Length: 376
Image (tube, rainbow, N blue to C red; front, side, top):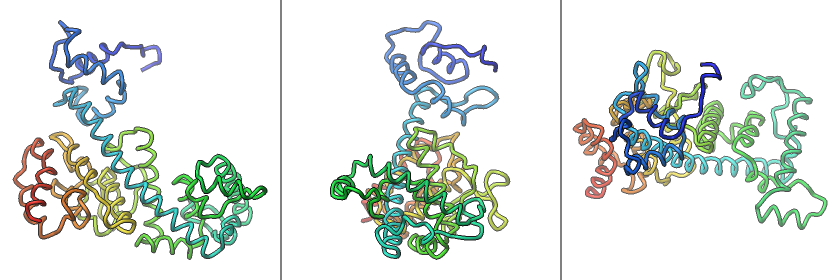
């Protein structure tokens, strides 16, 4: 389509365009009653969220140029359910980020002192190729460049910081512009923290990875993944339909819950795993297992369950089946009924097998919580 073919449409015209392309409304556009409550509600929704934002959530229902089995109210609900999912995911990632920053600060502070982090040659890889930086050749010039850029960045962050402790440091230290490692880590972005890990020497990387119960390659793969996901969450992007371009490592103990498909995902040991929502959830669960074993995943479980319907099946999100959505949380805090104990899950999984409609599936989490309470 050329730029001359685009034109501004009014909100009612945008709703009608959705209608013409197959989306269901419970009123007629031929004899439109401007006072119709549902019309006013839909007008408010499209003027708030925008045509293309909503359209992005409608793509799974698009068949041969028409939307199938999709009402406008269902489309708006899907947007808000994804928003709930984003909030739950971001909440968990924030805990992972806080833990990562704490462990980096402790490692560098303990080994090199409060300001030792300023000298990159002390704690960075100093020679050879760094495969975590796209096999970049590491030498003194590369280290100096990274150090200079970092020092310039943290000066600005310390200067603009809202932290009371950083402000106190600045007030009490008239000529010192660099704050101790324990203070500066909380001023960095997740991307900054990941960059520090990638720059580290192998022994330092290994210490951080051991704290998370994984290999160096797994940790960096997972951190890159959640950094992308966090950016999507922060910028109101579509998370539920995300398909990753870069293939993250798959946590071994969670592979059984992921769908495998010919060209849908990526291959590990001859098996192709999903690159959709399910792998993101597995990575978050794996990292959180070393961050907070009592973390309450109730909102995350609910958010995923409510996004399943006849079109958007568990498989379309990368889960092996309906049961896998809940099985993946076994042994982790549900957030409202205690831990998903295996002995209890036997009864719950049996119940899931009898759920065949999307409406029943949407209510599944509530039923599970009631069953957990009754078996407590």
